Length: 593
Image 1 (cartoon, one colour):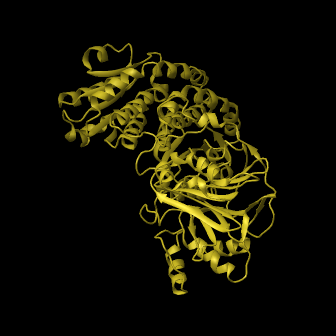
Image 2 (cartoon, helix red, strand yellow):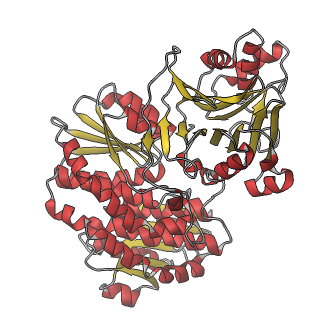
């Protein structure tokens, strides 16, 4: 993990382009960085642990010579963050250089075998076996392409790789298996990358590489081959967003910018309505729905369960992707399995998708055009959120919810709910106009060590999401609970050191949630309520609150009430002197298990 870029340029020095491009992948999470270039004099390499700016100030990554090169930002999986464990890695003779995303499952036995043959390893990484395997095969007389192919035949696991060699100074070989890789086609310049964000400044024309395919980039162009060596004719897609959309545009952090983009993200996602209606028309015989997701997407899925079961009466399950295999035997031809993934490359989710396809119809709700999930699933709904740079999901979560709402409403023929969704962007703008209220609350509670978040019904997944955001970017322990579960154990932890955030929209669950609120107040807890602006109880009985337009009823509350919780986490993070865009130990694109 977690980001790679490679360039073959026509008449420009490659290192500065690689440095700029790899900087666009910082949001994916990383602990080290490196660049390798090649020219007629051989391989040139610089790398180190730490942030790009820090490493570049020490060793000037951009001064490497040549017009062909590869770069990497690493998130440690094998070996601690260090210069030795940083990518790129080379063979023993220093003639081959490789960058790699993913996990090689059988690297230990391969490494042991190579060491017995006399090959020396400098790092603790799984990646280093790749250039040494290629070296071994080239020493047998194979050219670079064939040596890469032969090496990959014995590797098990996930990978996206970029390879350069002293013997081929104007060429990059790329390959993928269960880890994202795209090709960028410019005006005489050619790129590989794990994410379009890295190359959007240079081209919008991309080719999506499929599992088992090999990519050859050189000064003449691009060739893609399948696992048998046959040339594959690939379509060129045009990215429908630009580099400006991935810039901060005056905001201090991407997370705040993306929170403020949620009204426009919803408007764009609502354009998927007709596509969703078409998909539903092809779902005859479905009597069960199963959502499969991780993290934030799991919380969106829980909301979908409440909506679908309450409006359509169709039994709906929600399963964590990492736990899916234990439920796979319950699937049949009458089950629709819905996979939700921001990136469309989440390893657990993709593995579950491949299993589900054997028995059931599959639907992917994804933000990234051309990602692996979109090519595997029977049906696809796109969340039109645009690029999300902050690691903590905000606008992609809202967009996922909107897709789920449209799906549930069309499935139940609930035209009133469909029409109501058109009003949500305006309500969001209204919420965001009052963010200073949340900023003040955040300042008050920024030093606490524990938070509880509670809600009932549709507000329960919102409470879970609020707690997750807090954990992700403030490092404060936060727990989300169904409000009625407090008395079954968690109430023992409530005292005046544990603030409780209560999600309290008007509706059927209001009175019972108020009773739970009174329970925690009676035990000394400070209470923060997200509720209606017309709620007299909140005005008179609650210490801290954020009010939302009373026209926002319980059924659409998840689309609005989560936004103050996002802002609460964001401002607490800033108050604590943290970077909300780059939380420790986390990465945006979790392509390994």
